[in-house]
Length: 299
Image: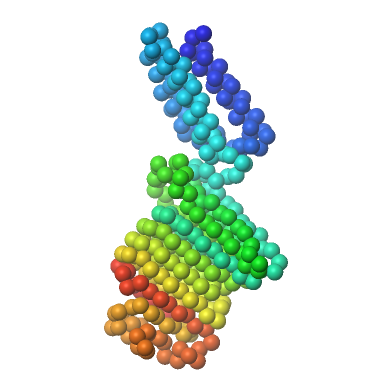
């Protein structure tokens, strides 16, 4: 049997197996885009086969076909296993539906080096859209008594997201929204990430950001009587916007002149708005003094 005959037999078995697995919903249709992208591997395998055919190392011609099929199976299962649409080459949508009796939502997002945008609220507990050409995270949901727990973790071990970096027009690669009624406790961490959080309509209770060498833009609202924010990040740019009729207290900033220029007064090494104690809505902010730039604005 010639190496070429062996190769075409292996390819036919491979394609038949994939079609069967797709029909059984073991794999999803993402595999065809992935395989098309890497189709030049077939040419490489044929070239290796031709080089070593009828030589003392002819076994390499057969081995190239085996390696080609093995690579194809790996690519297919990386992008299409379990029928979930989360591969590197496609947009990914998802949501977690609200369940009765929840009194709070605790969300933790590990960005690694991805960019995040939150600009809206949802009738569900949470929803998301992760753009193609970005490393897709795992999203796990659980419930602990009356608190929902969502963990979004960037999969550092992902094959294509770890090898390839594709610049896309949209700055924010991960887009998320949280419940418009369930109080939110949110933690975000990352490095070299751009975090754009418009939480003006979200019932936010606590927000913790740790983004080094990145950018953080946060807009807060008045949906909870008290919001606690903690932000840190070596060489990061931080910009905060708060309503002009809330009581604002800022800790951890050494630049007293800047605090005074935005209307805050010094009290016990903190800086507060005038009448802080009497205002019904309060925002307490604890900042890291290692930022590259800091901007606080009222709207």
